[in-house]
Image 1 (tube, rainbow, N blue to C red):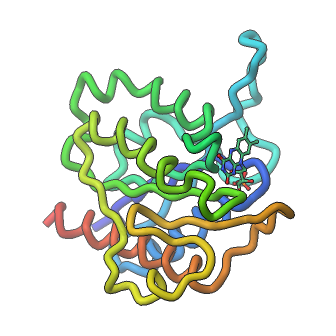
Image 2: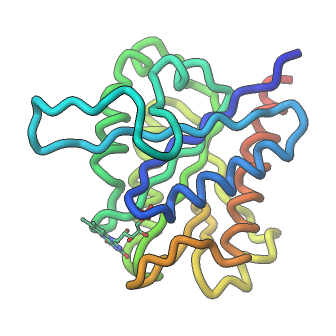
Length: 199
Ligand SMILES: Cc1cc2nc3c(=O)[nH]c(=O)nc-3n(C[C@H](O)[C@H](O)[C@H](O)COP(=O)(O)O)c2cc1C
């Protein structure tokens, strides 16, 4: 049987959220029977006529609505933007009405992740902001349980609402060991939940 496709969609300008996405993908790929598909979204331009090329210069390919429709589970990540998700992620979600109308995402598991400059600069509100549209789609949200010991010991990111990274003022995109461990745990939990729901 083919592996279950678990979609990891992120937006990242300076690499932190991308590194979280790759750690979550490590967790997903550690679960036998699941395969991570890492995708990004294009920037939103203030010039409406500007059209991005179909292939990004660096990083993951752009996600398509077909991939969202056909995934077994979704991990969605964004840097914090004034305590909210980035416009590029919101723009992508706003293009998913057809999937809401068809109910295509109902019952699929999902999780969210973020990166911010400051530890108290809105990580949890950013995570919650991404959960709202996923709940409207009928998705089942997975957080991180406190049985993950790194949640109690992290000096950087990592929350029960989802994996996170604190990049600091110098845009440090490399994850701390606890942040990496929690992102992997989140990917594993998402993939294991997808497998259980398929069964
Ligand atoms: C417009 C804008 C708004 C931002 N708002 C916040 C914020 O509310 N809190 C915070 O801690 N960092 C904020 N940041 C910083 C980014 O969230 C932070 O640099 C993040 O780690 C970038 O992730 P990336 O490397 O994936 O792009 C903001 C950055 C920009 C450009």
